[in-house]
Image (tube, rainbow, N blue to C red; front, side):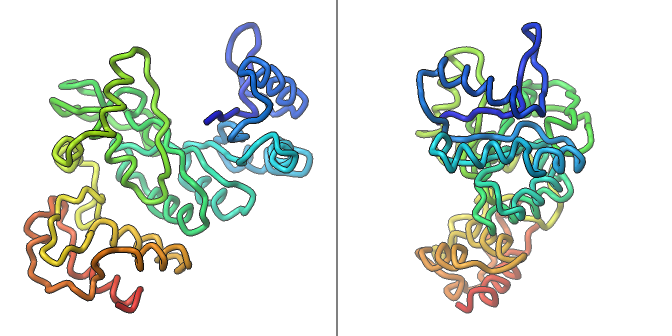
Length: 302
């Protein structure tokens, strides 16, 4: 899958941003030639920092028009946009002109205000989230250190936290891929061993994927909010609790046929919940799971 960032350029062999459509076209031609292809999978509008930039790149004759034209001409399959701001993710998801959004999703930003609403908006509007920085620029993998996480690494205010003694790429990816709206993760690697660590996710056990304890150590959670870690399982009634709550959260801004269909395909529905409370004992984040199951029953009617 090839993504080309319209707006990422270089001058004097150094990276720079550009909003010139002509420069973007020239860079795309060089990219296609270098990659020996005649199309790209994602024509991405590169790195939008604020409302002013969003309006600049989406007005008539802008980079977005270039990306849309590329898709119409068969030179691109999807139109995307990248940003570090949750409010811009939500705006782009509701815009109607984007297929995918690149946005950082990692454990260090779990409690960023507005992030959950932004991701749910993507899911409701069928806009795929390409999750970048699942390792927060590598900082999540720095063990036993006091680390400053910058705004661009979390999507929220800069914070300083003590890294847990041991964090694996599998745990980071498991967290990122479990979040609402996320379709895939874009990882950065610098050596073969790091690639192997990432690919191990595909064969990792549930124990290796468990990230709930890390969120507790980071204090990156709001008490009572589900993080979709599945620590509450197994459910005696066979209900996939985390997935049900994901669908409920997605539907809060408006029920869609996609959400209904996803719920209908689940093996066990919430009507089978016996309110036994076993999940409550297991949940490390104080989620009132029975209340969430009641919400699901009201939302889906069964």
